[in-house]
Length: 299
Image (cartoon, rainbow, N blue to C red; front, side, top):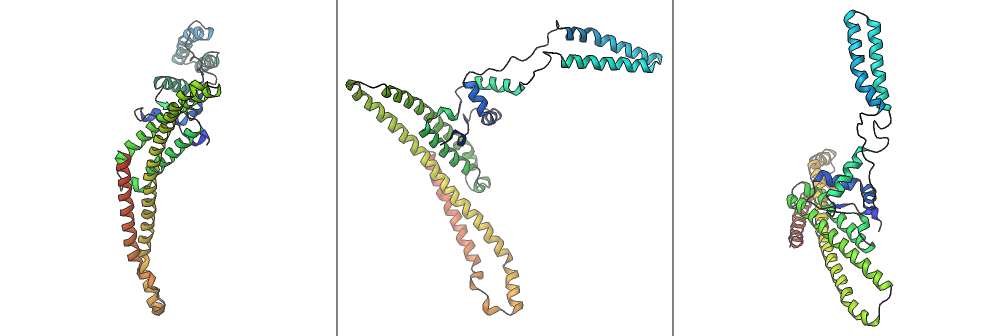
């Protein structure tokens, strides 16, 4: 399972704007985690030649240009304004007057990453087994939140918007902790353990296995809920298509009657109403099953 299949997981308590920034900047967050620091932002230093020239020259040139305009000397006035523009150009292009290639938002992301440290998880926080479970979790959550039946309010869309991100975060938090403990445990075992220690290691391995099984159960519960929502989604779209066909039925009946093809009027056409009723029942049943799965998931 590739880390590219897993998005940055953010604590739902983090402001949404910051959470979106984190999800869109996973590579930068990885660099920050690895010790990267942005260059200090340039500051205005009055002691530089360009700054001194700006502080003294701008008022003088401006006064000179206005004076020429007042006296009617148009050409010298234009020359004065030209010199003023040239002075600003020198100031802007002078070294240290602006950052060269350092985007300003990197500083902001760096500060946010430090402020919310511990409240987001990157793909590298998970070992391969945990990464696969995290990908399954995000697929289930995204399929529910992106469904039409959720958007139309056929599900409890308000509770979904709150509970599902919380479930995703809790699963990510547990998987990150499990991955870290599992890595430490594997390193210990790789060095070799004495026979006397092997017996003490077994309960720890059982603890890791039982914890993973508990997380897997939570992921599977999410997937069952997403499966019921997918059933409801299919019924929802099929019902819409049947309704379109029902709306066109009078035109088909009119064509059959005018062509004198009554004997060839396929009886299945008249059963569209029955099909629509069955799909409506299927949709209600699927939504009901989704609600039951939601209640189980919500504990």
